[in-house]
Picture 1 (cartoon, rainbow, N blue to C red):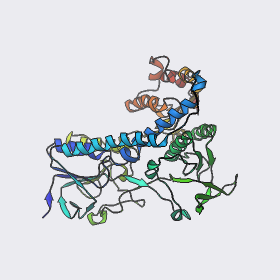
Picture 2: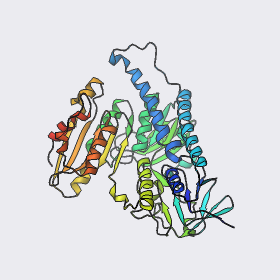
Picture 3: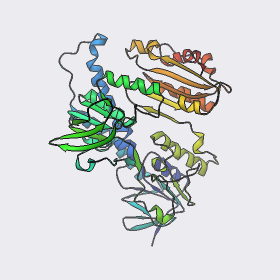
Picture 4: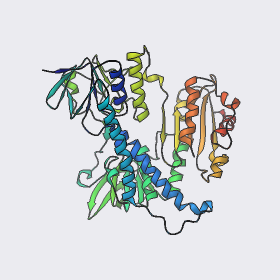
Length: 458
């Protein structure tokens, strides 16, 4: 006989636990199922550990630059990777433990550990037991994609998950993929002391960004000694003794490189292949993402998909916003939908890239009359005082409505500053509000009025 619940939440990534807690608070008897580590990607192998490692890498970088600030550091700067990893593991363990304890201590929540499979539109099988509920929320996340690359099955490789277990600095780290994940690891391990080569099939890094952003990031990376192999076609892998050889077809360089470690960073695939979605009649797209509507409901009444597995966002903040949409519509008489949110994200290299709304290229494609402006970070007093003047600010505006369409801030504190622009975009106010504001000196934000003053028709 099946155990009856009011709701079942499969997965404990960013949106699952708060949704389960809200369901329970509303008096619904709720089951939570987790087959791996509580907290999902972000806490275990994503945001939390990577940004912890980024912090350690930046500490090493700043220590090496101490003389630039008149600070004398005796001896050579080194990195103890075992201690770096131990610090990361401790922070991750606290996060994972906290979420597990939260779920287990929440009234009206029953926690199951194991692999869940749908067995019909309102039934979930777990460890040989059947659970039934009228509401099922799928929050199973995504995992690293392994490309169909010749030879990849014959060589040892790392993903964003397994690279977390390294306790030694690689001699030469080769990274396949020049987008967000690959670039964060590239700079991180270069600062730890590795030789790093980034291989990207496109002609430039992070090709979804505007050319000037990609070019600036390329300059930052080359300035730190990171080797870049762009427009790399016909990529293959081969074991050569204790090294890994990557074969390339690049127009401007030798045809292969050899390294000690290989990291694959070519995208993510949803964890939907073994959920029994077909038995419940839940539709997926050709990439395996669960198809949902604006309220995150699937084609099967009572079943919703939240977080990375629905293909409507690939970030922790979009996953949490999924929870907010579902909860508001269920319990708060809300009419929230996915299209209400403005695309925003950050690339946590140093200096960081903060992005909100459209790129300039995307804005041009709308056919609207545009204003665009740019300000080099070298003009910002805070950046000069910190000797961190790389990058620029960029703004794109609808000339007729005066609404901000997009912003990119590549530079010191760019990941924080861009969110003030995001607030104005959500408020739907004129960009001229920035000119009328008084900002604190000396900060990066005080130069937003100057940026607005640089706007010109494009």
